[in-house]
Image (tube, rainbow, N blue to C red):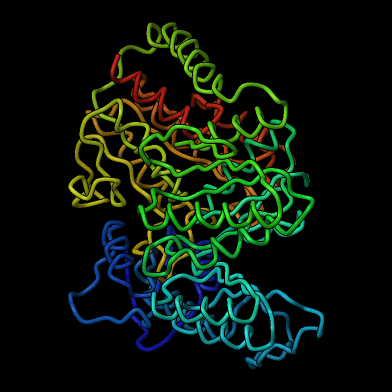
Length: 513
C-alpha cells in the first residue's frame, strides 16, 4: 500500500531526506520510500510513481513522505520518518543534537563553499565576501538580482563569486564540487557550465594534458544582465598566472554583446601580459573561423583536440577532418551489430544528468534528426510539453531547476533519471537510448551498476533491437573508476563512446541510416 504524509512548514536539506528514505527502505515490509520538499516538480514525480497526493496548496517548505509498505505498518513507518527528521537513526548516541553556527574558519581561509537552501545562500555569500573570502556558490535558486549584487561586491573587493549553481571548479589543481582526479598542467579554464568543464577536463586528461585552474561561473553569468562578471574576472586571473600557457573558455551560445566583451577583455589582457592561445567552446553556437590565437569550437571533444594540437604543435585545421574520419569508421563497425540485433525503432530518447551535456547532444542531433525536443531546448519551439511523457525524438535534462528544488542533483542521486530511462526504453517506438555517465568527487558512487540493470532488463524483455549509447565523463583515477563503469555498461550491452558528442553523433546517424 502506498501512503503519504505532508509535514507543513518543515524544511530539510535534500541529503537528509535521501538518507532517511534509504533508512526506511531497509525496514522489513517497506518496498519503497521517498521524501521530498513539496515543489510542483517533486509532487509530479511522486504522482508519476503512484503516490496519491491531494490537490491542495503546498509550499516548497513542506515535506512530503511517501511509503510503499504493508497496510498495517504504513502509518508507523510514516511516523518513524517524521521522528527521524529530528533524531536521525544514524546520529551517534549522546551527540549534541542542537543546531549551532559553525565555528569561524582559520583567518587565512580565503575561499568559502556554500551549499544551503537558495533563499539563505545569498546571505551567507555576502557574509563571506565581507570577510574577504572568495565564494563558490554551489546553491541554486538564487535570484538574478542577488547574483548581480554579489558579483559587483566581489569585483570591488578583488574577489570571485563562482556561481550560483556552480557545480565544478578546480583551483591550483584541487577539485571542488563535482570534480575529477586529474593532474595539474599548463591549461586554465573558465566556464559557465559544470559538466562542460568536467567533460573538457577529462578529455584533456586522457590526452595527458593537465589543468591548473578551472573557474566555474554559474550558467547565468554570461547572460547580458549579469554581463559575464565572473567570466571576465576569471580571464584576468588566468592571464596573470604565468604557469598557464593555454586558456579554454566554455559556455552555451553567447549574445553578440558578450562575444564582444570577451574579445575586448582578451585583447586587453594580451596587450598587458602578452598573448596566450585561447580555445573557445560555445556549445551549439554557429561555427566561426579561427583567428590568430583564438580557436572557435562547437563541442567539447573538438576543444580538447584543438588544445592537444596546440600542445603538440600540429595543425589545428586537421582536427575536424580527423574526427569525421574516425566517426565514419566507428559507424561502419556498427553494421555487424545491426545485422545481429535488427533495425532499431524510429525514435531516439535521451536521459541526462549533466545540463550542458544534454545541450551538446541536442546541438549534434539537430544536424542529423528533425525536431529533437527537450525540457531545456536549444530552440524554444521544440520544448517538451511533458518530460514524463515525451513525444518523438526527445532528450531530457534531469538537472534542470524544476527537478532539483528540494531534491538531490541527479549526478548524486540518479534514481529518477534511471526510472524514466527504464520506462521509456520499453516503449515500442523507441530504438535508440542516449545517456550520460558522470563520475568524480560528489557524484554517485557507482552509477554504472543501476544503469547496467536497466539495459540488461530491457534486453531480457525481448527488446533486442534497442541500442544504448553513452560516454563516460570521468577518469580511471576517479573514486568510481571509469574502467569499472565501462565494463559494467558494456557487459550489459551498452555502446560506450569516446565522448558525449561522439555518442550523440553515432546514435543520431544510426537512426538516420
